[in-house]
Length: 384
Ligand SMILES: NC(=O)c1ccc[n+]([C@@H]2O[C@H](COP(=O)([O-])OP(=O)(O)OC[C@H]3O[C@@H](n4cnc5c(N)ncnc54)[C@H](OP(=O)(O)O)[C@@H]3O)[C@@H](O)[C@H]2O)c1
Image 1 (cartoon, helix red, strand yellow):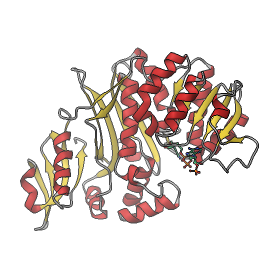
Image 2: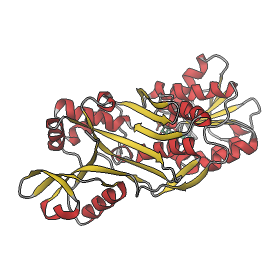
Image 3: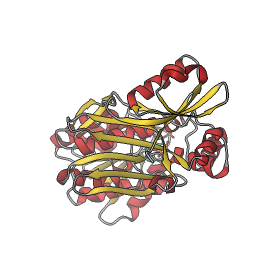
Image 4: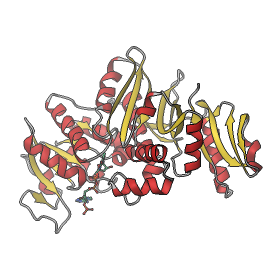
């Protein structure tokens, strides 16, 4: 199967190199920007790929929704299989791409868009065909996991941990999507759609780690807790889907606490299979490229789709999901949440453990406090 590659950056170079060595796959043309066609295999017009009858499949690794979506539709309508590592594209346009691929009789796969090198979505898609998936989630952002691990193991503050992540190439120059939880949210959107055939487009909630301080981390450690940024998706008996990202204080012995550096831990729970977790590299040139190549070889073996054929856009509803929360907030706002315990009171700021409250109330209240100019940090507390 001859594969054209769209984009020749971090992941694109890895995909092209791996294609040259892979059994059953052949490297085709690579789309670059005009003026960058400095080698014979590079082209700068999408038509050179969509109108090339020798190209069987297109791997999009450019990023962004446009022009990736326009190129994807052109490739699919030209009868090419389509794989992508681009979570922003699939989160925004996955349902349309899935429908178009089915109509055109080609495959549409996107393993690398959630979990990087971890073969999570692939396994989840298979499990969803034969088991009832109860929940999906886990640590899906390697950049923030690296930062949390650094803050805990070296005592670094947030800014120093971010700087180190950027120097090591884990965080982008603009790290906003990682540190606010948006990147992990896009990934949990994909996992929900694979598991339940609904790609939630609204009602979603994401809280990142950008309000976390070194003093917070020290306090968690003293309480035997480890902070992780966790994505959660769950389907209730009435069919409502909750989907959100937030910091979670896990216990020091919990599986997530052992996920170090920039690793991911993606998990799902099947009614019959029980809980399953997979740990591996969630990003990087070769781990991500290897997931793209696995999709391509899956296509050779007849794999057609990850979303169910009738997958639709829908909404998330986080009003029924509940946790106790650890909250740091101004003392003057202390009665906003039902406190099960006042953990610390320095006269200006409180650290409280709340009673169980809904995820929606917690996220909305924190947003309202910030809008009013107050500093607040919160994390769900895994029950003892
Ligand atoms: N890096 C990772 O570890 C990783 C892991 C999982 C998923 N992903 C996803 O994989 C995708 C690519 O990530 P990356 O890290 O490889 O990004 P990257 O290093 O920025 O590479 C993207 C490449 O695509 C090119 N490109 C963008 N728009 C183009 C266009 N219209 N025409 C031709 N070329 C275009 C860029 O060219 P210019 O440089 O000229 O703009 C760049 O060379 C993203 O969706 C990302 O979310 C990445």
